[in-house]
Length: 261
Image 1 (cartoon, rainbow, N blue to C red):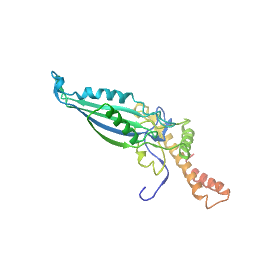
Image 2 (spheres, rainbow, N blue to C red):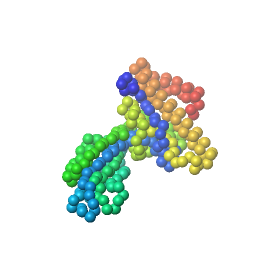
Image 3 (cartoon, rainbow, N blue to C red):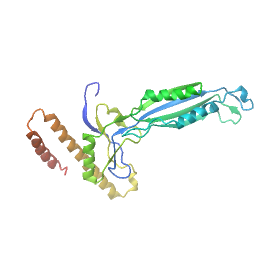
Image 4 (spheres, rainbow, N blue to C red):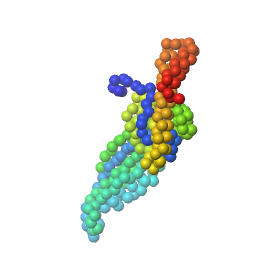
């Protein structure tokens, strides 16, 4: 779509975002995710002759401690601070009397719009170089951070959720990566409202009521956004202030016939 020059006015991604109850949280962005595979090289040897070997686990330990304790940033208005976490650590063959020749560590950043890929990578390399390690480091990026600031779409979502559920929703950027990252750069983007709890733990009638509210809230969202889009696209044709009243009248007739309310 981007290559064809096409843009969307609004987009609501159908992903589970609620925390405890239907509609209590809408995602208006997500953190970026960047992983690294670090291999620190040592010299293989026998435990009884440590002077003839270099233990890569011992060599990595001070750098690992510094990476764990590093304060990457404070986040911002929409995002929590950047985090760095180890996901895997492996070295040796399982023998108790052998110094391994290398250690492999896998880690992951979850980062906000307050940081760049290049900036984070540079800081990691600086720490590793500071400890004079012989290493290889391969990076992979599964998603960049994106954000939809508070505006037309979030306001429409909040009002529809409040009307249908009585819940005042919270805008949030927590959680894992989202398919929204693929369309965030060509349109306004907002999350979907649906409970993240396992539905088989609820009674059947409650599930039906929840689904009904979800469908009704979706209709309200769509109706509000259609109205806003019509008003924006037709404004140049009807410069008189009466255009808003005309569109409102048409919208109400369509809405009532469709059974939105």
